[in-house]
Length: 228
Image (cartoon, rainbow, N blue to C red):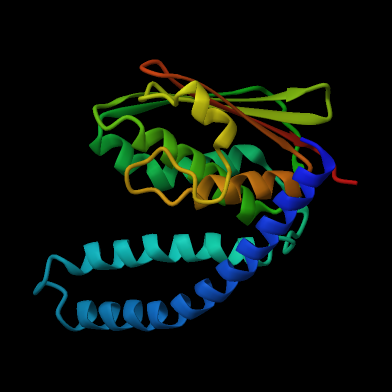
């Protein structure tokens, strides 16, 4: 990529960030009111409507999209503190395991011994791995296996890979992943991977994706243990 293309890309991302922040702000206020009203109705009539939990779950899903929009508008809100990658991966697994079980998906997690804590924004990394594991789950509606590997590299980096047995991504689409509003999903927005990539960059890390149609996708994340 030459200098002019890089500049145009930065300008496009800046414009999208401004639009995203404005849209996210406008959505968040009525969304909070809607969730609060739904929770109140559920508390008043806990056995009267089986759809309240579904409504709250869907509102939370919309809110996660709003979180992505807000991060694009203010991507530098990173607070580096010491955290353990094992706990971050375990948390994202606990959040997604029910959806995985419903689809007949099994997790196989391998963690190396003596992985040191890393300097990171724990909340943001949870967002990263939640997005990546959800992508893996959504690629396997008929079931399968997700393999997660965590290990140290060169005593100064942590390597995490997430491999699925899903549909896979066409080779010609791989270079476009992470571009604004590019998605291979039927009902996707492209925001999740865009934000994921940005958070990893803000951690001075790298994200690489390998995929083959009919075989599956492998996402590789490399994060420095120490910042600065």
